[in-house]
Image 1 (tube, rainbow, N blue to C red):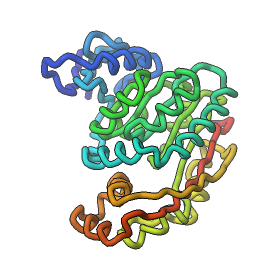
Image 2 (cartoon, rainbow, N blue to C red):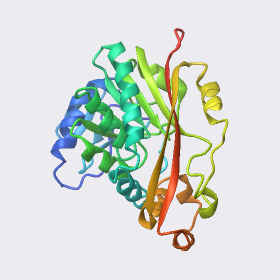
Image 3 (cartoon, helix red, strand yellow):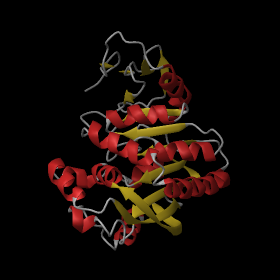
Length: 307
């Protein structure tokens, strides 16, 4: 049981906090809520605190942990997975997805017109969140993830992004109706919580891989395949709280060298199932350059009136 005056350690080490991370946290504190009592939060020195005295220390990299009572988020993506993702995305291979996500968010946020924040659940390195807040003209960005290595990258992706460690399947540390847009790009989707934090006319933008995604290398490398019924199952899972507003596909081809293929395989869920040495051996057996098909479904959902 947590009480007033409780201090939640994130790492008090005497190292000065990241000014950019702290500035972003200060800007989004009004969009966040205490995970223990639901009260408003504010940034005071190197900590985020509520009026009841619950205090959360800001890490030296600029993110803060707002995990709920009794919840210890899984470690999330490893440093190696995050580095692979940063390298792959930094090369621009998934720029078409980022454009589609930011365009869908821009259309939705323009309709909402409330100036709320953009929340990315399972934000990873902040790649898609950074694209989106720039598309929307400098909105506040909240990157939620359980991976600290990922959040360290997300904070650096744009000065307006604040990083928050939390469990995406539990109560989100975001105020009711604070978000004009919520992003979920290959990430968990807690429908009830997402509906709660959206403004009345806000939107959830979801990206999932299509059935033909990476078809040229999935079996060759032993990667996890895609359920062809995934979009329909997604809609069914969200149906109690959210309704589909629009859907579209993003399909394109990529030419990848061996380093690009390794980064692609190493940045997603397949990385948990393929031994690195085995992956390197399989990649070595591929042509020097591989044409790979990327296939995605982009869906936009709005709140149901009863949500």
